[in-house]
Length: 464
Image 1 (spheres, rainbow, N blue to C red):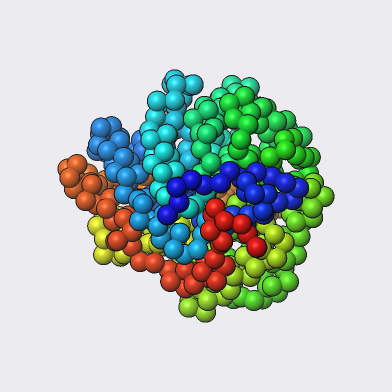
Image 2 (tube, rainbow, N blue to C red; image 1 turned 120 degrees about the vertical axis):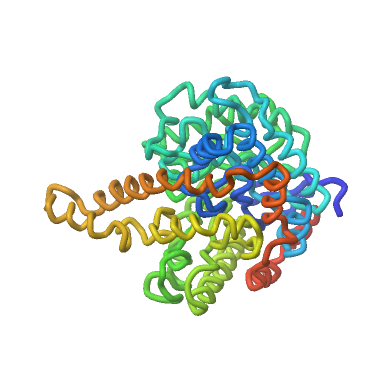
């Protein structure tokens, strides 16, 4: 138990504590809690569209109650205690801006976001874990992916002064709220940006960083590379407490292939990360891998064992370089989670029919067979490619039509998924959402063993 966490800062290429000793942050991402996603929480398409489908089917009041009980039960102190026991010393907390403000009333931060985060901070302080706040779904959408609650495959953030100012204003409000809280390691300005250029992204980071510094001089600012955390061209430290962040998903982590093979093996794991490591070295700043992970519940036993090796070897490589890390993701319906609700829990049984239909139709991009579309979409994509000939580039056909077909079918499944909860009382909804509580989950013990192998030094102690 910890009474007070040490403040973290930056010194050269290291994150350091108050004693100026290097600290490696080793943690898990809490995806699916304050930023829900289709493959994590089970519903089709994107978060706000699913909420609207619930409003249409069970009514706005009950839809709000559904989400409230999910937030309540999805993460409790028991989850933080488990992560501390596994040897981690930090959590990355993805959140959706809608937890703080409504599009109809920008700048009025009267949502429940602070209430949930304050409770988490109290638990993490007690158990010795740092908290990195991650704006995963930004106003105007920072990338075209489902994971930023984007239904349209467009990014409005980069060309809109309105949205950029709203992001900066929200971060200033968050920084004001947590300016004296050392349990917060820092603020990750935006997840997986896809900006037109590195220069545009750099300017955006400087604007938001300046807004944060108006309220808070104490905390680290985490900034991700462009193009989903992989491209650092045009980026440079703009503050003496900047930590760069990358994301490292290697093909063997999610493609149906054995490990090791020619595509993913110990050598390619090192080589894939080399550019990020070299950038951090040249920039003279710390590097943190904010996301990596494997689909550890999918495929044959041989494939799952190979994926465990990938995690172990990625962590080994990060730590060899002195880089902090955070794995994706802690809890889900059975794709990547360290904790997964048991199959006989009510949420899993009640939602199973449409989740199976969703899987059969291959509509979740992360768990689907790639842009070639699998059995569902491949015949159509091949026909378009054949008719288009050289005028239509095959990869672009697969990217555009694959996304549009998947999203179209996912939209059609929104109402059937919501109808699985029609007619339930508040008491029944609350009982169902208890499926997410840790006592009702299976723990991925082999992943726990890897975490304990790489156990962090206590969060308030010096790293040797």
